[in-house]
Length: 169
Image 1 (cartoon, rainbow, N blue to C red):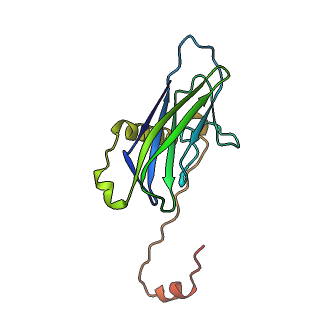
Image 2 (image 1 turned 180 degrees about the vertical axis):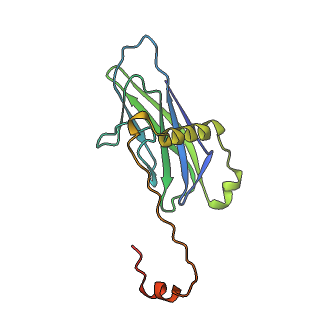
Image 3 (image 1 turned 90 degrees about the vertical axis):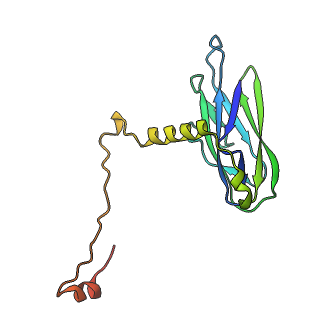
């Protein structure tokens, strides 16, 4: 079974962004199997790679194991598209069966975004995924983060030389 939620009840029709949270509920006694997830978006709406880091094939299908319980996708518009209600279709494919669910989303002008409703549960899950990505694991202990140098400009008797001959890389 699939449950689909959107972070926002509506999305701007031009340069808008939203998140799609797809939860997968499997039977406990089902045989472990690999599945593929397809996400069909209306014309003018695009998506990034999944935020969970699952492998995607060349057809943009997300490859899942039996232990995978959710997929988080960022969707967005680039150019202005027609306002109105459109449908996002999510299909979970396995050898035995295919499950398809749809979720409507309203595309609106920027002026109408004042009426947007935010699903706090989806927002919290996005934050958790973001924090999990930024937390260094035990495997990443040899990675060194280098902060760029911040140069202060000071005024002294040789400041004019610095201004004249300084080369910033």
